[in-house]
Length: 201
Length: 200
Image (cartoon, rainbow over all chains, first blue to last red; front, side):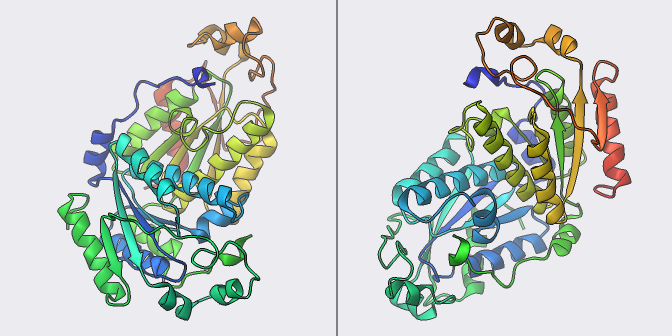
């Protein structure tokens, strides 16, 4: 199937793109339970970066689940394909020198590993941020009443209740939201990006 | 299926993003037969915009078919899904204030219309560029010998030979590549982008 596609001379190479746009692409991959704080922190991070005039974009349930991935459900196979596609799209953004921020539960270690390898093979940065919030705390927050519905059996296969969450063993950054407020979480990530030469301030 | 998702306060408004990044997102959707010149023009356009320090990104067979769409074939259903996904991804790029340039045959009007509507509903620019060269010309170019193989029946469902190409009736731009060279084509597209306020 692949013989119909041909590599095209005249493409801009990645290092030239980085030089022209003055930033290096990277995917900041959040993972954690529903209600753990991924979207809150990723929104705040995106705002911080945009106010520094960095090209950045957040991928999350809002813009993915009803668009690109609207044909997928919440069963295991769909979770795997959901993460695969998000991984590929974030890689495209990183390749464009964007700072791609993804905020999905991404519950399975194997799937997150695939995404990391995808980026590493392409020489693109990948930063796994574990939003580490205990289930009891996430459940108490329950911003949309989903844990309640899951406990009542109304929602099936809900991560943390009747579907597993496999926490990362060696995330690049670990944020314990019980101890760390949003602003501090953002600064922790910003410092990592500066130290890793993804951005300069 | 989307009930588990919650809208999040604190998201950046599109207008604020445009102001902070000093550019407006848009998808430039090139369509045309294989070897009509889509990739050539897309590459040249991307280079031009990058040298102006604009955020721009090209989506084409190279970076989509082996990645996001590696699970798809070349049958009609796959082609439809291929274009659907590309429409969605280009919309994400446009939403990020990027100038997304897509270079896929995208042979069916209905599928291109879906991509257009997706953008229009989200108030994002969509510029359809018909990269037009007659079949006889592209067949003569035949850079990878695909038309020859298709004529010999070795490749099935090949657009222009054994699968249809439905040309756009009202593209924003119509570039005839046997009359118009690459730099002129880029110039035409740039003029359109400036005239419509996507770039200054």
